[in-house]
Structure formats: structure tokens, C-alpha cells
Picture 1 (cartoon, rainbow over the protein chains, first blue to last red):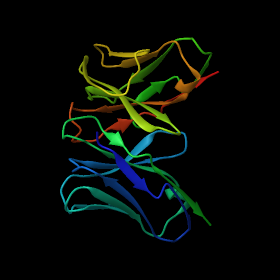
Picture 2 (picture 1 turned 180 degrees about the horizontal axis):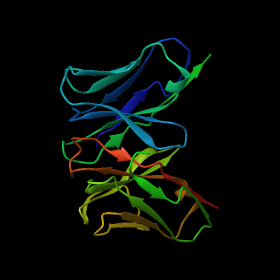
Picture 3 (picture 1 turned 60 degrees about the vertical axis):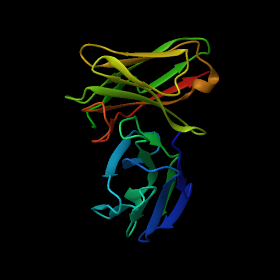
Picture 4 (picture 1 turned 90 degrees about the vertical axis):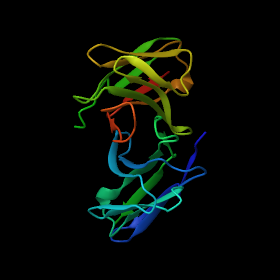
Length: 111
Length: 114
């Protein structure tokens, strides 16, 4: 079965600093999805990547999928307190099956 | 508001009891997914329905069951509850049976079994 490993498990950064979260799979990803979850709340869709080498940006968040489609990174530039939360990557194992998720990266942004 | 409505938001019940969680998908979405989130296991897929039919099954216990009704809302039934069933239960919806467009998640039901 597809397993997604996220690193780091948790991250504390000072406001204004950049950071990167990684998501790695042992198998080719047919689609990679990034979600953000505020503590105890629902998941908010951030971005979807499908093609090898694809890169998408939204405001200060950039996500990339490597050429082999087995690793994705999420980069936040000039972090703000509003970026705090849990970031989860999800992937479609076969191209037509429900998403499986990594265990998440807990991000705290301190002043 | 994501458009996916889950009720109730919180539920506290005793071991051995049965509860029903309800989900109304986003307007126009035909697929409904149920996930369980716990601290140690993360977000685990339970079951998917598409237009009233069961589409995929994940790590769903035999004590749990679900259905999707003609109006497309879905219910997750949890019976013979155990302490370990305490978790956040999420419903998500998508327009098709495939994942091409991603999912929209509800805000979840927090179940506490005491």
C-alpha cells in the first residue's frame, strides 16, 4: 500500500523566516495534494500537483513535485502567524482511488 | 464554510453505545468519503460512496457502517463503541468518483468515548 512520509513532524519558526516541508512516497504518485488543517478543524485544500516537475504557487506558498513524482515539497516564504497549523500531503495511489495521507507536519510560527 | 456540512460537531458517549454521524456534501458533488483522524494513526480512509453506491473501502471496522441516501447525504454509523474509537471523523466530497479535482472537507465530528 502507498505510504507517505512527511518531514519534519513538527517545526517552529520565527515570523518572517522561510521554511520547507517534504512529502516522500515509495511509489509513483498519480496526484499529490497539499492541505492545511488548523488545530481540531477541517482540512483546507491548498494545491494539487500532477505532472513531474510541476510547480504551483499561491500567495507565499509554493509546492513542487519532482520529476520522478515521488517527492513533493511545500515552501513558505516569509512565514506569518496565519501560516500556523498542520500541513498534510495526500496522494492518489493508483490514479482512481481515495487519497491516502501523510501524518502531517505541525507548524508553529512565533513572533 | 467549505460547503460540506457535518453534524454534530461534538459527541460524547459511553463505551458500548451506538452513534450516527451525518454529512451533507457540497452542492453538485456525488462522491462522499469518510476519514478517521487520530493522534497516532493520522488521517485514515474509511469508506467512499458515489451516487448512492459503495465505491471503495478502507480501514473500516466491522462495527462501523455507512450509507449514502438518494439526496446524497451520508451517514456513518459506529456501534459497540470502544475507547479507541475516540477521534475526529471527517467527511469529504468531490464532484466525481475519481480524485482528479481533490476533495472538499467538512469541519469534522469530534467523538469522545468515555
